[in-house]
Length: 91
Image (cartoon, rainbow, N blue to C red):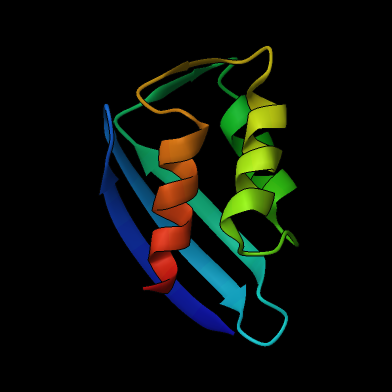
């Protein structure tokens, strides 16, 4: 298990705290925070829960985030910038 973090500047600041399994290349836990807004407010917690167990690969994460953000109001990031912030934890 590996812990990592990243601060990514998009439209707003995105902070990622990540634990991932290096062997399986999957997310064990993730916390997303920053200067952005989501509505409804509980959407962020649900998104974090949905990302646990997902492969830490750009296309897989982007697709998962794209699907989740349908019907959610987001101010300050999009699926591409959030994906980049998450994948950036591995570098």
